[in-house]
Image (spheres, rainbow, N blue to C red):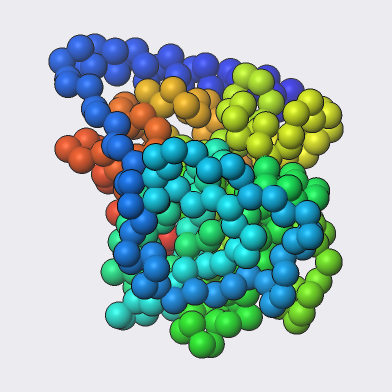
Length: 328
């Protein structure tokens, strides 16, 4: 019954918005996608770093880096044996933390438009920002489907453990994720109680539930027809059983404990269908959980803070205003 309601809601919304968008698209110039930054941002290397694990990450003995590719963008990180957070401290702290999870289809971590730029924006608004450089499941790790969630849970716990030194309140820790990073943020929002690794120190006794979650053009289902096949293949491996696909489809696990959520998607996203966000909205409403969503006529995929000269640039301010309400 819940699936039927989601499908009906998605079809109704999609039809209504696409009808109004179709007339205006003929009068606009198509937006040009942003090219990836070929060099690694200097601000990334200059930022303070917190290692996630006190020694080796779980399963380090099995780690195998991905092969090198010619002309690989320097802003796309891969081959990560030691995951970490890069920290941006605000000049005027508001007592809140924001964990930023860049995307990259679980093949890389996009640290420029979905990392450094987001960190600088929200640090200017008073947030202690931590950008997560998480391990990639296809780099030889055992229990590959759990590896990114291990790092995300650990990151939230470390932020809470270090709340005093980071000048934040431990009950004001939000997360925002992009694309596959949105899948990881959604997995954290629904799977924060999962025991995906053995505790290593006192931090692991702390709660891993984020207090609010932002999902930006997110992958929220690994089932057809919503699935982004590249992300599913790299996270789960080939021929994953149906039970594992369902387990790692966060939209199927929205419930009474899911934190308030904020979604952003563009209707013309041909990489990750906006139906992922529609399905989450329906699931959140069915579970009576707070949810806000902004669905843009244009923007495509991977637009970070937004495509210049388009309405998609409004979402960071809208998210900040929303966080003011839910983290009051």
